[in-house]
Amino acid sequence: MITLFDFSRLHKVIKKLSAVLIVFAMIVAQAGCGNIIGGKKREMVLATGGTSGTYFSLGDAMANILNTKLSNSTLAIYSTGGSGENIKMLSNRSTDLAIVQNDVMYYAYTGTDLYSDSEMYTGFSAIAGIYDENVQIVTCKDDISSVEDLKGKKVSVGDSGSGVEFNARQILSAYDMSFDDIHVVNSSFGDSVDKLVDGTIDAAFIVAGTPTKAVTDLSEKKTIRLIGIDAEHVSILQENYSFYTSSVIPAGTYQGLEESTDTVSVRAVLVASNHLEKERVYELLKLLFEEKERISAGEGNFSTFELNEAVKGISIPFHKGAKKYYKENGVEGF
Image (cartoon, rainbow, N blue to C red; front, side):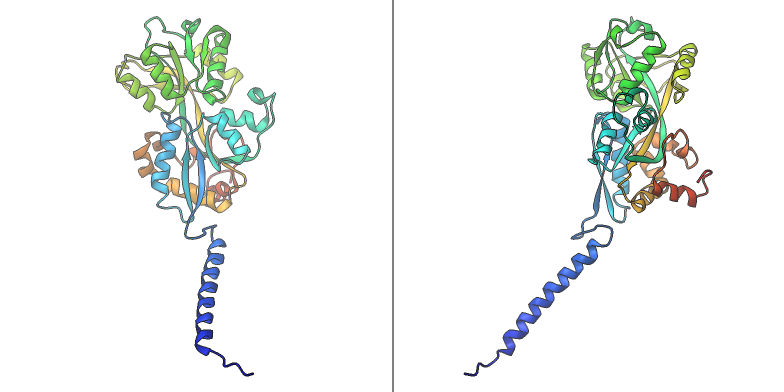
């Protein structure tokens, strides 16, 4: 028996099969091009800090500007407890990027001092130093005018495991004090401000670029005082922790602040997981410099971001993508 072949039906089958093959080829091509699948860019998670702090504010400004410029990536901002948590997130690969304090990252990377009883965290590398972070000891109490006056008081020392908590411990040690001499409260910047307003704490350590949004908000509600660190105790602090530098918070930084305040600062550093691709980090760093003015409009502390300053105060290796950028731009040492 002879069966007549339906060429019309065969043509329809071939047409449908061709369409399927074309779609498949497009998916394969996109998958091999910057991990963009189905037209979606590859998300890079940036761990920052509390929502009332400078880390989060900067991350938000970066995302708002750079997400329209990055060729095959997007920045997703994640609020965290700060440097300590960010380093753990980098280690377990739950974030691609993070902002951390240079002191905390050094301890974590070398397994020394504050990390001497824990594992070393070496799965990340530096991209750039961004700005200096001032230690601000904030109070609304008239009977607190020095670090010594914190004895017996309820004091917020930042989130547990954060860089702020480490700084508070170190500064107290320069005055022969410890956490045993105060009533320790672990709170984010925003929560610390709320507790200062309602009087449930007496003072708070806030380490961030100035002006800090949380402190600005507080100064608009209450009369604030910043507790200074005098030259003698700065010297003692620096003998044990060389990453601290002397700094001054100018009068007028916050509402009602009529005198400048002597203090110390550390450096905020943008770091990346070693698993993050070289070209992604290179493009990110390149755009940070190209879009500096626009990012600074969203977070003023970014205005101090400069090429040669970006490599200072870094005590761990740089990411390959960062090395490539600095070498191309003639930065000494690369």
